[in-house]
Amino acid sequence: MLTTISNTRRGSGEAREEESTAMQWTLCGKQAENAAEYLAQVCHFPPSTPIKSTT
Image (cartoon, rainbow, N blue to C red):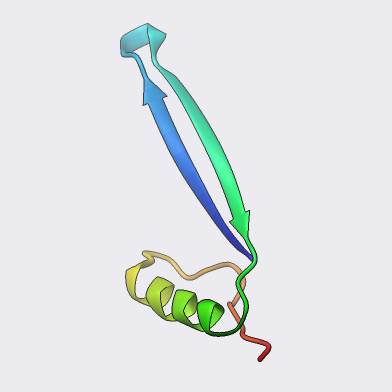
């Protein structure tokens, strides 16, 4: 399972609002392997759960 979070900010000063949207995907096989390799290169912190391929 891969979870991404998108933050949207609107307005400024006292009227500033923030909204977060989370999206989840289940990756399998080569897709999961590619995601694990990519995230290992670009993440500033380790994922909380290792990404494993079951193929």
